[in-house]
Length: 313
Image 1 (cartoon, rainbow, N blue to C red):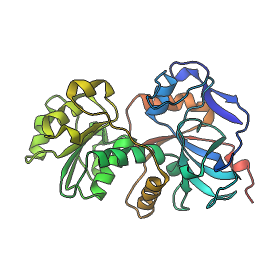
Image 2: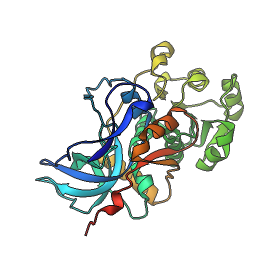
Image 3: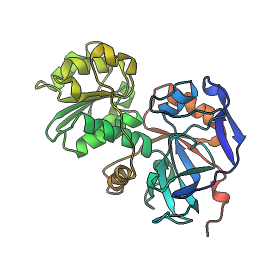
Image 4: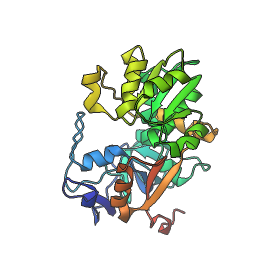
């Protein structure tokens, strides 16, 4: 199979398309012919040499990518609920920038016909990340929530979930060019600038109940100043500031049941997935460059251009 991978640690330029042996589904697993794979900062961090604390093994050459959508083309012993030809979306830790990925049957859910392949490839990672974060900070109906970095994929999901779960006011920091987009998601947009805390107070004179940070900087420091209980602040970006600011490290495990809940919200029109840009597999380097600018809104996707060549009948 063809896959985008890196043979050495470094910047986006280390990404190359190369050939690997086709993976095979074992007991309890399925093999998915990948149509789309989402691009996340996690992928870029792995490529740059970061090793997660939870025991992810990086073996060069390494295929990055931790979310995907495609069609099941091989089913291992003991798998029920899916068969060859099932359209699915799912998650893995690595190996998704490829023509095939093998995962446990408990790592996929069915893709609705109403969901595009681009949307399906970009839901799993940031969607579940936002879900986990908002549960940790315990968003409740009637509250005021601050989302720092509201226009990015992770922040966009967080804004929508906070509104869905009953937050009365969601304030979202974003560049001015993204204010209309943030407003369309249901948040009150505000620019990143010095004095942010004071400007947030004019919007929320009764205070901010909880905050989720996806961008660091002034937005996270404003959250620490405004939210009374630091246990209700979560960052998925500024890990280097956690100890300094007295915050806790937050993690979580993705699950098919949570993913199915997000898919259901999308089907009901309650969760939008904005696609910023789609790159072919052989331009994974450019996809990494694009996401590392940390500008723009929504999700970056890698698409396998030869997917349509297969006959699934």
